[in-house]
Image (tube, rainbow, N blue to C red; front, top):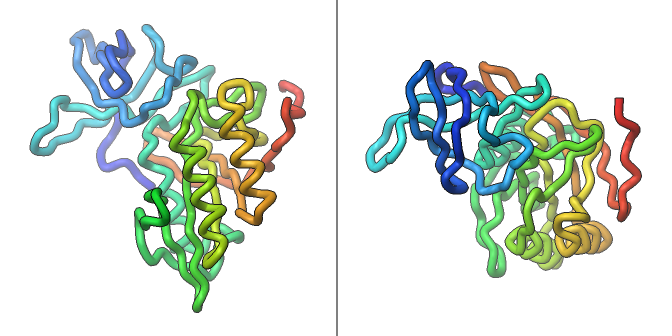
Amino acid sequence: MRFKGKPVAATLVSRPNRFLGVADLGGRCVECFIPNPGRMHELLYAGARVRLLEKSGEGRRTRYDMVLAEHNGTLVSVDSRLPNALIAEAVEAGALPEFRGYRVARTEPRFDDSRLDLMLTRGGSVLLLEAKSCTLVEGGVALFPDSPTARGARHMRALVKALGCHEAAAVFVVQRQDARAFAPNWGMDPAFGEELASAIAAGVQAYAYRCEVSAEGVQIAGRIPLNLENPPDYPERS
């Protein structure tokens, strides 16, 4: 998925709230929208190198969206809205073997008391899919979530309920390319880890993919293994 425009380099000055950043852009301070409610402490700190994309639209408070951050030489996509579109794009292109033959029938389908991300169909089969954005990587392992998420746990329970009449899948989109494996962030939110493990045991499919991220755009690069151990057996640091 290519950016609609060219992101410009800036330096983060502060993050007054979850969705607002103040950045130094060529010697002037500008406000930018941060499309991600996660903590991202390791990415968004005073002095961090970020990239902003100019946006326009009625009702906008800011002129820019923050789309990328740099971490130890790695570009990270920080837009938590992007995974839905990345998965949909890859499914329609037949680029994900796990979902080959499916098509996107609906976005944001409602099921039980939750709004999930995608409804896929293949013949007479229906698969409900929940996509999660992951930006935190430690020692080569992508970790989700980076802050407690009752909503994420609720989505896992909804996927289990969906198994009564449909297929169901949880997909973790790691928006950077330096992850070699994925694991629930047991130290941050053990409740989510338990819900994910229970969902998989019940028959919910679960996959994790890393992304190729550049100044031109973001695309899914390949599947990485998912590790449910608590504490996880992390790969050795390179």
